[in-house]
View 1: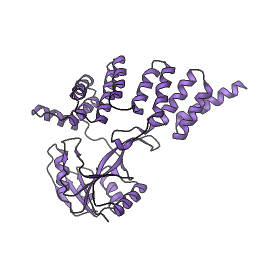
View 2: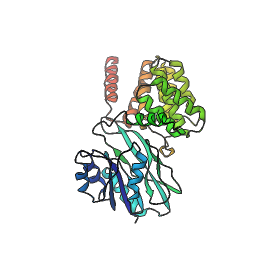
View 3: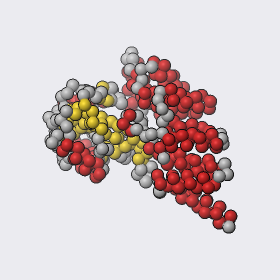
View 4: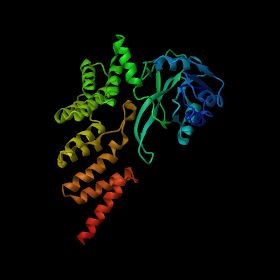
Length: 360
């Protein structure tokens, strides 16, 4: 059976670290904690689970800190988690099964990372991350922020997921601050970090600057296809904020230059027409979203609702406003099959029931 070192970097995480380690401590063979300057009781929380606690001065470089944590690992594989991550019960079982069957020839295990949820806990945003990395196999973390390991050798896609459960906001300006400091120091961002720099600018409502960064990223032609598609979508979001409606639509259509349509882009185009009360055109794009194949293993950011619930509930509204209540009700029930607890589904059922009663 493969052995695993859990390697974590932490700072002031006393409120969540115990929860994280409780969910995984019985599954791993070693826990390494690298503290980057806690002033609370984080180390005490970690000490309940491990003696391998090390100090590492923070220097605005996540890759450096993660590489430090990996350097203390002694098991076959290194696993990383953030302090506000957990493994749910079903994922704990899947992780244990993976350990018992893992082919030692595997260099990297990719696993889903669930980071967005609705009010009922349903996953609304997910993507694959490198989660287990073979120890001392020449793979290192790179990137001061949005750090990553470039996989080498045999890659396995696992069934267990990691759930990100934030309890408080982190420093919202940290990543942008680090990128700006790198640029001020004369560092040229490689394409992947150009992309993430653009996203940070978008989050900070620097719409025009974000458009410039995304534009240069896309024109450079060196981006990964999933990042190219996401960059086009974020260009559309920026244009929308700036009141550039036509440019927003054009940016969304540009996603089709990189690959087959993604449901996320189709839903955004559907919304563009919906907001202009062009319900027939909107219905076309929402229907197209339902034909798109969800392929999480491509590695891009995935909004699961765009592959079922969202287009169905929007098609319900579109057809209702077009006067086709029977078809609208059909799509409402399809939406219910995707999300039975949706308030919108229940509201629509009441609406259709009232229509039926008035008709009789």
